[in-house]
Length: 317
Image (cartoon, rainbow, N blue to C red; front, top):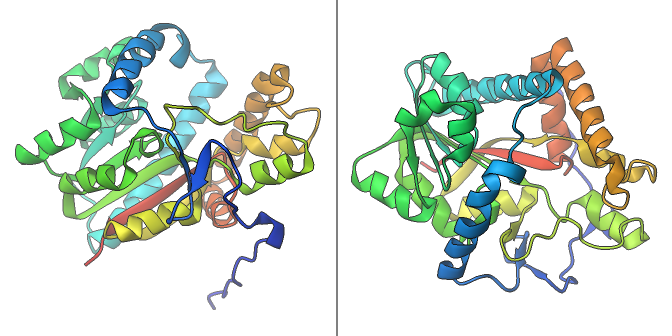
């Protein structure tokens, strides 16, 4: 017999309030930067900082084995989630699909799915990371600004069964407009997978209230424009004509903020070990059972937990 889940009830003190100086609570229920760069400033900033920093700060030159195992586990979990939700969207058929990765970075996801026989394409602002890690994928890569590149791709008739966007939607000036562009390159029975940072999360706001966090360490002004949560992301997507098929939390390093000895925001010297601990825990869970691990992540995401959150969406019929 299927177990009926009780409704999630959050403590009253976790109610989101519009009390922060740098961000406001928008009508969807997530926080948004009050002052944003003009488009030309934003483009110049990405060019002058992000592109140049790819070589030294944004990406590691090499990863230790435990980190590679973690990356592999995340890809296998994403693969399972995509297969399950494609089956829902395409009424049982998961064979022969195509995938577009927006903000493909180093190309680990592209490489994984290409090796499984999926037709893949990646787009990103910069090419350094892909050239560094997976130069063999440059033939299925296009460099450019998502907001101008996606409409061009749609005009060319490019359509994908899976559109994947990790850490992208929280960096754009108009999230609704960007979702519209993503929809233009989605197949009618395709799915959109979106990962965003879970900022001003229940844990973060609680620790600000108690004084265990002295400031909003996650605030990245002016480049990080959207500060999402589960309810806000789903609400935005629904207004954009999408329905939520699946949702889960991801990367649970922020539980360590509850311990003053591993509060990596206030004690930055603990950050490396905090990340290493999270990697070991999630690798262990995955090794025991990837399927059960995904279910755990779904429950935690439903409860508002996860340093990042992932939603899977389809076009409303």
